[in-house]
Image (cartoon, rainbow, N blue to C red; front, side, top):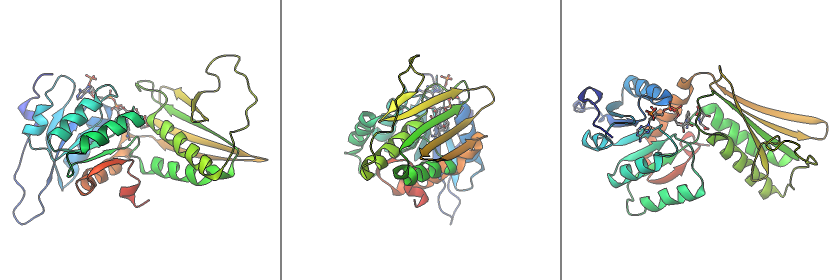
Length: 267
Ligand SMILES: NC(=O)C1=CN([C@@H]2O[C@H](COP(=O)(O)OP(=O)(O)OC[C@H]3O[C@@H](n4cnc5c(N)ncnc54)[C@H](OP(=O)(O)O)[C@@H]3O)[C@@H](O)[C@H]2O)C=CC1
Ligand SMILES: O=C(O)C1=N[C@H](C(=O)O)C[C@H](O)C1
């Protein structure tokens, strides 16, 4: 990595007599999400953008610039290194990058143990509607013998299925288990591998990649003679920003590891 330009960093003292601004660094700042986060932080009166880092830049600039919170929208293969760096430098982390399984979450929790004042929130989706969809799906899960998840995204997305779809399926599976719902009826034998999607704890998850889409998800539930379809659409990445900014403002008050922004929303 090489140093980011001085133009990417601008530190300013807190206005006298007012609450100090929260200094924020953005990792993946030139990516699709990072660009939107930079705009949102710049537009927020209580936040101050002090560092922008993208591939090829020095992460050390984030620490040198005095970032108190870092927002990470990078790549699943680099995000763990970024989180480690932030924890080691006592910087709170708001992570939107996907690719977290239980093992990675446990590793982050372990890194946080000697740092009781540092907070990390890892959320597969900052869209308020997407978070609500997950909650509604959990509520409905026990009433329907069959459930499938379909996620639909832009074709440049690096991972499949989406982090949101995996979390949604896990939450539904947990709700079904808790209510004693047996495995979904499915007598199909795939004549083509993959035709029934990926199996996430017994819930089929299907991934569509289509030019023109941004980020969308449907949860389909079926019982005798009826279906329930829950759908969320992010037509614009601006839709993620209220959730990102909420997490930036909250994370300093939530040391340790938080998964999802449900708690910050009072859900
Ligand atoms: N939680 C949520 O609500 C959402 C999560 N996401 C997730 O966020 C992630 C990013 O998505 P998106 O913005 O579309 O992807 P992009 O590829 O557009 O952006 C990622 C950026 O990170 C840069 N980057 C790569 N390595 C590093 C590094 N080590 N340090 C800093 N920057 C780095 C990339 O640079 P380069 O291109 O040069 O490699 C690129 O500019 C994905 O995991 C996606 O699933 C997306 C939308 C919403
Ligand atoms: O890459 C994306 O675009 C998105 N990624 C996240 C995911 O994988 O769940 C969130 C949203 O679906 C957009």
